[in-house]
Length: 236
Image (tube, rainbow, N blue to C red; front, side, top):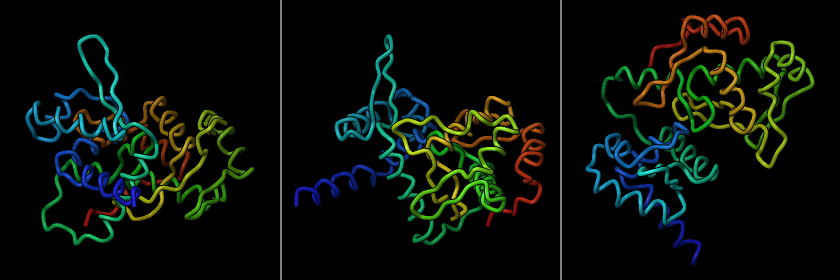
């Protein structure tokens, strides 16, 4: 019974629209101040402080003080998985809202940060490319990098994206809430995002989780992953 009550409490916290906006903003993997999160959620700073206190007390967020500022971030990978799963369920089960997609919507669908790894159409295409060439194998439960995949990444200078052997899961399929197919999460997904960022292939949007691949990045996607960004289908 106690666990059921805990689930209900977490559901109520996440289900509030303002708190959902705050959590979504923090899915970009960066730490933010209360003022920044208030702006993203379109609420007052005082209201944001009240919401943030609840989220911190529930261990959904952590806070770090630096000088006069306090920075908030998602507390653990478990919280990230919860939000990813809720997003995927909402995308599948909820009827689509009838409104024209904005430029931000379109950019988010093409590619975005899902905490510390890439999501969206580009990320799904990368995962599909890996599967088709038998560089990785995965299903609903998990995945692994094949011997051919290890050789492929090392040959193309992507050895930093092979993942550090630590306590974190190396390779995890993550259901993409916009594409409804899998992209790659876990340590491998995080390291791959860092590698592509270090190559200067994309820029992060300042007020969104979206990332924009530049000309060099689009050429790199074609050369390394055989992905033609021009083939990206129009948003529904």
